[in-house]
Image (cartoon, rainbow, N blue to C red; front, top):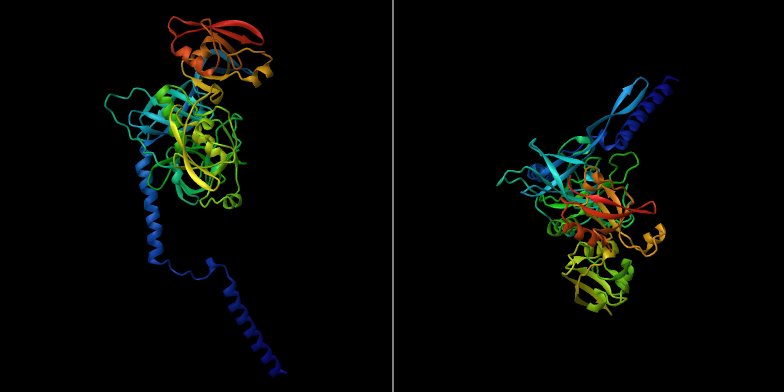
Length: 474
């Protein structure tokens, strides 16, 4: 019996040893002895770290923190109640980021960062603070251009260099810099997750917003809006605009406006003081990669021409239904949204080269880009101090205005002339000093020519009643 017990004991010990050995092979990698990293792996990791470091050191001085300030009634306690006093106090109503793109103090940022502001304060990386003025806003792209005030003559500020957003590939490393939650100059990194994203639902965005976003998983949080998205050369490839989130913070889905759109909007504002939208007169549809291969398209991308507006720029250039547009000015066109965004920021009067596929043969067609009032129905008018929209057929029908022409006030700046003169959202302006207003572009032209020091009379419809408001410098 003792012999049997000894045998069992030895067998049990053998089983335990075997089980421990087997368990060791099943342990997770972290619990097993890890092999040391190879020198090549460490060198590659350090090289990437140095690239991030160079981007941060190069660009951080050009990234600014923006505070939107507005005067609001002071609230005072009166026993159990809180009521407004007769005083106005300055309050911060929004925070965001921006990036210096010119040494003279020109800054690119988001429209929604500065839209609620009565005054704007900008803090540089070195701690200096400046007031800033709005040069122009474009709600349709969520972009704004502001300029620092009080820059001494000859002083050159650090500015970022423009990159090429078209050269980005899905999987490329990118760096975002901004002021999330007020923490200035926070640097995050990630990759390009997708390109030409459209149909993104953004708070307060209009239904006709131009969307052709770069999607990235670089951490973007509230306060990052308006800050730069950069490639590993430290070049500006996008303006961070929004995040898709359920919890209010970064969940790895951020969106940036490609730099070719941002630069087109900025150039239009600085050149003309307004947004000029390009238009060529085509309706397009996206094509699946499989269909493109059937049609003989080897490279990725291309959009199908469904309709061509008679006598429009595209029709005059010879574009036809069933043509496939592959590139515009050398820029690959992968979706209808990327085509629309590209044409929208192309200066009217300039020529765009369309590379097309027709009957399985490629060719290039020069198209003279035009503009229509309906192509830019909503513009920011700095001399008015707000955004106005052309009254189109749909608006006239909704508001029961018959054939009335003019513009409707979309929004007013808290401290602009419109607000101080008594204008309200949804006011309809039909004439400037007796001259009928046909569209938003003409409204801006009439204001540009007016002497606001003397004051001008604007004929207005409000709540279906006609009257007039005098607009003047205070």
